[in-house]
Amino acid sequence: MHDVIVIGGGLAGLTSAMACAQYGLNTIVISRRIGGSINETPIVETLPGIRPIFGPDLAKKLQEECKSAGVEFRESEISEIRSGFTLYNIADHANEKHKAKAIIIATGRSPQMLEIAGEEEFLGKGITTNPISDLETLQNNSVAVYGSGERAGLTALWLSSMCQKVHLICPKPRLHVTPLTNERIQKTLRIETHLNSAVKKISGSINLESVATEKAQMNVSGLVLCERGRPHLSFLKVNMQISDGIAVDSAMKTSAKGIFACGNVLSGEEVLAPETVMQAWQAAESAYKFVRGK
Ligand SMILES: Cc1cc2nc3c(=O)[nH]c(=O)nc-3n(C[C@H](O)[C@H](O)[C@H](O)COP(=O)(O)OP(=O)(O)OC[C@H]3O[C@@H](n4cnc5c(N)ncnc54)[C@H](O)[C@@H]3O)c2cc1C
Image (cartoon, rainbow, N blue to C red; front, side, top):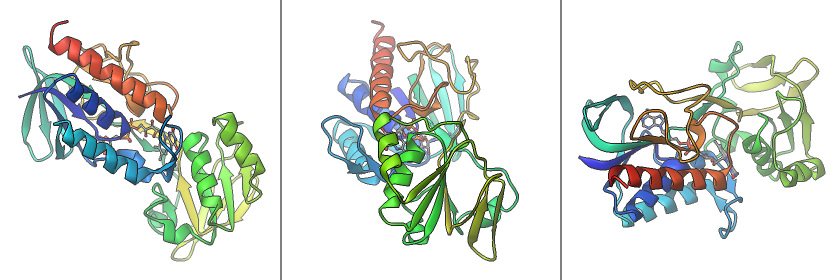
């Protein structure tokens, strides 16, 4: 049995696990994939005191720090959380059972899919959610990035240094990025922004060749999906207040006793890395107070 099980090993989960270990809690991270979406983030440059860092390097560094603080890891998918009398019971897809006094949910979200004809056919043949693993298809070509947030803006900027042209297709009337990111996008001649635009059609013979919105047709070899999708919550068999994500109070407590949450799985707007770190630390502190009865 563990004091705390952290479900999800992205930036939120790894940070809260490290904080739990520093509070002296016996902690395990169970995650489908350690590193989560930072493995798909080209450059993280918003963390104070850390120079811009390649996302997968940050994931590796965080996992190493967690391990040296005593955190255990298991790469597995949780299929169920149920509440027992005083403990939570967790099962994974391999049907292994785990028990904990408290749980921190940090399972993030999937990128939003376009849900238009041809999308599945071109997945991995130009359409991608991971620009790092599919860089070969994108590099030196014209590409499109679909999304409205910081993730889309920074991905477009990163690709603009190695692609002929980047079409930034934003489904909202304006980009929801920091003023600095916005200024850099405006100044980058290779980025063309298409506001208030939805991808209506994708076509190609074997690989993706073009993308069309209501107003424009673009010849591109790649389309990177960066819009925030649904939270990963199908495993929750516990009564909990949920809207477009898990609802928490300022101490990161959910409406279920002993369950805390942080990161992109929360309801509300997408948060950047620094806020994720703050939430994760707060979730760990609340879990500590709960487990130790403080
Ligand atoms: C692609 C991308 C780029 C970004 N770029 C920047 C940036 O440049 N600067 C910045 O400040 N912020 C950036 N952000 C935002 C910042 O990184 C987020 O704060 C951070 O990604 C929060 O992620 P998370 O840990 O909540 O979720 P995730 O990173 O999505 O991690 C969730 C983890 O949970 C696992 N999981 C899901 N369901 C289960 C289950 N049932 N059982 C077990 N495991 C499960 C997943 O496999 C994954 O490993 C970016 C975000 C994304 C997604």
